[in-house]
Image (cartoon, rainbow, N blue to C red):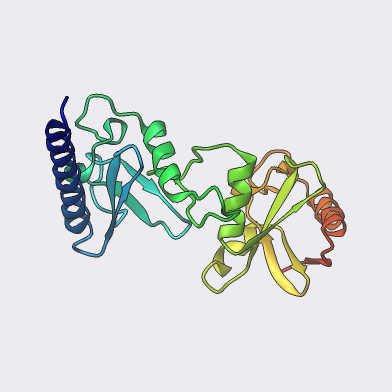
Length: 225
């Protein structure tokens, strides 16, 4: 291959890359045009568009996820998606694989926080059972993680706010360093502190949280409503 041919091949490659980048830019612009969606792409060229929808809408024909406790629903937009597992029209739909790819789009490895809590739609069931992810979700939603130095034993205590006040009566709550925080059961491995679990035990939970507080250097005071 002579020098002129090499230059020609290189020029074609540059044009191809530029065109591809142009296509991606157009896809991103179209996806996010109504300001209710976000376009995601990874270094493999896989991309998708996730748009917010009211949970009351008929979403059976879409792949959707809850992303927080306020019932925010994000759904894959087929027109701006090239991931087969996320498409209900691909014949290769795989809900859990799609959820994992969504997680990879939003979860930064260099951060110990994750604001998204990706859950099944419409059931709110957990998809991922992983202590690292639990703890990142906790910290990313104004929570603190208490542990007894065994990484798989942990309690997530989320800050009480006017927004979640109505849901506090069915949770174990504590004053932590002067701040009212309550057990977020979805990000807690200690089932004794989960009022929905058959092994729930109030006294045992209080003892564990107080013990973990000492280990982590936090002042813990039981709070009763």
